[in-house]
Length: 494
Image (tube, rainbow, N blue to C red; front, side, top):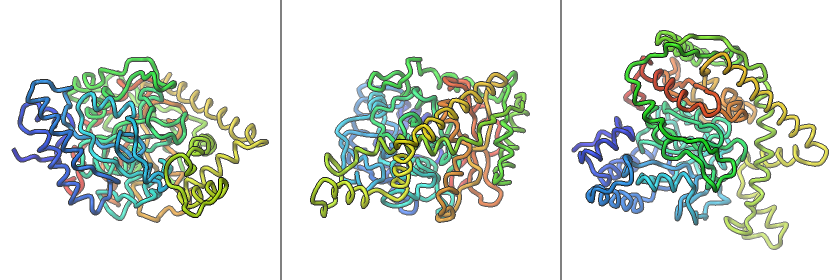
């Protein structure tokens, strides 16, 4: 049968495989062919192991022929951001310092997908060590937005978002430390889910900021996001921060929704998110239209306040670099990775290797983090930032006492052009609506809403729920998905 991969979700692909309408090998070859042609301009993938992908697909077909599929999604391709380890594959974190490294083990999320028979389909590009909001900070090359290749896909999970948006793969995993799943999802017109901190194991995710990092899916439907969360979520004894609560049943909850009905639901609008100076008028208009559609579906719209929002970026850019400076200390060219050939002793190995093979943004954050943790500054900066973090978490708890979920913009601007934000501070402001969510540890999801009236690129809206509120979050997101005016978000077809 002819495969229209532009229309496939992982759920519809699984249904076709189960019905025998296509084989996993046919599916993999179709995506590989598309990647070979389309990825020349997008450059979403850092590596694409064609032989390994086809071997996985062949094994899946054999299992299905024998009537022994490992799960409902056996044979469906999913890409991995190149900071999530996979045995025998690169895990460069888009950094030259790790360009020679291949993983000796699997991340927990990788293991869980393998156990369900999913085909691990390539390693996607990112901002180096997940530090960035545009995918311009990759140590190898930038990734382009499939909707407009002169514009960024967002970051740091830009490669994953671009690959899913361009239908080079039906779904991918990314990581979100301050918006790195949700912001590129908005820019590229995909669904991007950042789960509650601890819902998904971080074992095998190369750490940027350990108290903020969280793995999550990028997909082309809310149902697919729910399905992947069912697979990768849950308690993991290898991760001390992993939560014990069950992490299943999200797909079933979403599948029950066939028509939008938000009767009895209260959706909060944080006034600080709509009063921000610099909020693009087109983004604001799309968000307001989303609010109207939620109201039309029966939701009650209530105003709420998150008064400490204005301190979120300042707190984040103390806490995250502080943790990064500690986590990245291990990359020194001594035990593994690239070592500068001109280094002749211990100190020159440190200075030359880290100075030459770390990018500018990574070095900037290491220096900032080391400074705020240094003697005499810890209390003044890091400790105070942690106290602000508590205030931000309390703000969300107060807001959720008045509503079921929050609706906000994802980013203050649409996808911007390469080089447009050369000032690091300007770039940091791209995450102004997403950072507080990581500080509070709550779940958030970006869902495509419409195209920007001027740029023609997608704009998403963000839904936020209380900690462990993924089921409610996904059902609200699915309702919105059903009631939005634009149903398809495919570059060139939308």
